[in-house]
Length: 273
Length: 152
Picture 1 (spheres, rainbow over the protein chains, first blue to last red):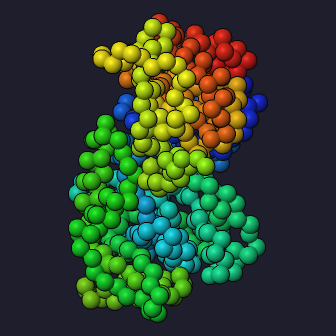
Picture 2: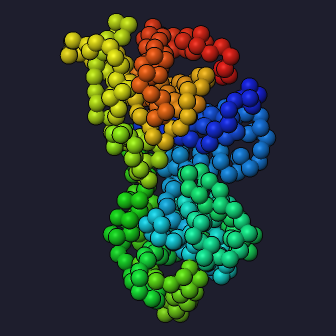
């Protein structure tokens, strides 16, 4: 990774973060006033930063590093998958599900119940021998404006435009939920969240094949020239698919659903013991 | 009304817009070289005579994508060269990459850049880049185009 700081960029027009790619090449802007290019085949990153960006800790921790890890991803042995990761008593759990199903509100509710938070939106997986390790990047929890109906404390905040253009509350999990924030965990179970109109929470075991299908279907599309990265990602997904997993069908609030998960984990723990 | 293929691209699994289809294809002769152009918007096809010779490989490929999520107007160009990639940024409205290995330009052009602006300003720029690339001097055009911008 090669980084150049150029004061001439301090006077350029400020633009929102913006990335585009073609095959293994990716290029984009990062505010304030910075450019970045990625060659995913050669694993080479070159950035030219404004002095303002280079001196801003927040720029490094919330933009440059997370975005770079996300873009390089599987090419450097870290697979980004769209799911949340939390931990209770040293056991990691993943919350997955389709977009808009309520993963982030459930994650926030679990954090408020005392689960440690590793990641909200994207979790980064690496392999360690035959297991998978989940990594988080200390990112905020992103809650859409309608989450205010479940979390009264959001009323004191103002939603803002997030990186993907969505209007959202971005809350610090430690402050918002009083949650412990960790950057690493070993996932031991997965819950696939589904909303239903009927009341209650129902846990239905799911198969390895359906877990693989879900994560493969919801992973970023990669060009054929990144075949090694694709294969590595599939290996990680295969390993994840061996974990005990359930579809969680809920018609309840995030708080009631988090309570149900808490009880379910306790029951399965005793049942296993 | 804008064609659907670029005004409603919403693939959450293709955030980098790598898989936008570019079904419109044509071949031109630019500065004596055969150049293949593919795009998702007819307005981005050069208003040049088509190359009559339909055989043989192209010396250079242009992939021009009309990108509904690239707002704004053209700004003075700035460039960054990194290994086999040269980037020319004219604000978010126009981001051009030159893949030296593949001999390919790929450009993302916002919907605020109308056909006239493209034909009158961007196209001559692309032609000049093409000429410089094929003559082995891929940066020559940038220096003369924007001596005030940050050259890194």
